[in-house]
Image (cartoon, rainbow, N blue to C red):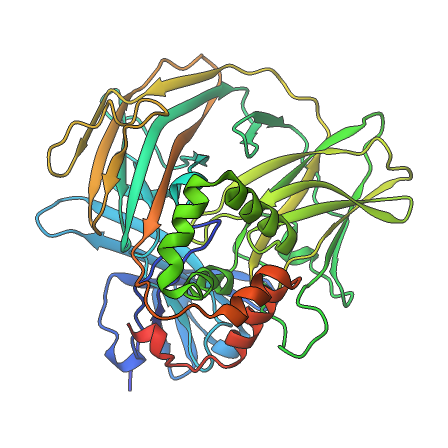
Amino acid sequence: MLRRLVAILVLITFLSACYSETQMRVPVADFKDDNDRLVGVTLKDGEQIRFDRPGLHIDGVIYGETNWQPVQFPTRDVERVWLEQREFRSGHTALFVITVVVPLAFLAGGLIALALKESCPFVYSWDGKNWRFDGEPYGGAITKALERDDYSRLEHLRPDNGEYRLLVRNEVPETQHTNRMELLIVDHAPGLRVIPDATGHFATVENATPPLAAVDQHGHDLLPQLEATDYNIWEPPPMRPGELTMRHELTLTFPRPANTDSVNLITHIGTGLWGSHMIRELLSLRGRELDDWYEQVDNDPKYEFDLHRWGAQEELYVLQVQVEVDGQWRPRGLLFGGGPFMTEDRVLPLDISDVTGEEIRIRLRPPGGFWAMNSFALDASPDIEIPVQRVAAKAARSDDGVDLVASLAADDDLYYVQPEIGDQAEVTFDVPAQAEGTERSIFLASRGWYRLHLESEGEPDRANLQRVETVPDGAARLAAELYAVRPTDHAELQR
């Protein structure tokens, strides 16, 4: 029987991306949604194949066409599938286009498709014809005390009659609070890359160098997966519950640039799928005391500090970067997760003044199942001073007609609040003149937080809470245990 691609696993997000409580598990035979299109695959050997038109999954084989010739791939040879969704909303002419790449490894016996309506919040750019998914701002800010800034490159945004147009939508069961939205516009020399760090400072990149080598703790070569930003991604699964360590280890080797004491590490990484699921499991441990926990984090600086300290220690959604100095690993900075649907390039300045020799070795120790890594590079070129234009919204209106310009203008107590799935607002900006002979990079600077719509019932699981909060890698071990016993049609995936 002809059967389309497959189970929709609605992912939940986490302290470094967005969260969805609602989940659906759609059997292959019952999958009727014609909006999701299978448009390509990444094979386990790293080869990336784009189909000329949407393919099909039939009894464990993916069929498609490349160069208008038929091709087929057993799913055992496929690492990831590329899915594109085109969504028409009733009564509207807007076309939403989203393309994501998802792994096959997280459900036994089936492919994974993402329910693309599930992530928070979604920002779409108007490309002159369609709305294109272009950003997921302030992921991880799951309560007011964690409100934060975010910087999203808007790759698809194009001027239309002298305006830039954005659409911000709530796609999940949560209440979103957006405090500020403005554009940061950088006109720069052609070919120059402009990348923000976690604080919004822009670094210029002229000569990014990929790793000479990338290996895991077993010596496996990971360079094909980590040398370029593409659809070939390293996403190691959780460890087996009985193993001594719950972490993988990644060692990157770069040539050491001469005559410099600092470099920029350029990363394109995000939180893994199982890691995104685990935030729901971790919050559910608190049962009926979850609201009290939110209250403590929001109002007691000690609780907020303890949460950040725990996150840095466990490295579930924040990852420590270590540099080898005289045979010892020294901490040099933190990387923050993003995605899972939309990850961003980020730079992390590294002090290498005490690194001798001709190579720089960098180590990361990601807990199994929590991270997906796409590319790393080093750049030693000096930063070029570039002007950044800050453009405030000239108009902003919600779908129920509320003027939002004041709510999105500044970091203050005014918010655009989206309590329901489908709440959306269109935000427009004037297009400033562009300097002749330059390229333009556009970023959305936004700030906000959100509160998940979770049922907080039952007694707290105090034994697991104590393990997670006090035992090193306790959360990663719990994640491994839950991953090991997951059934294909887990009841939680059918709600």
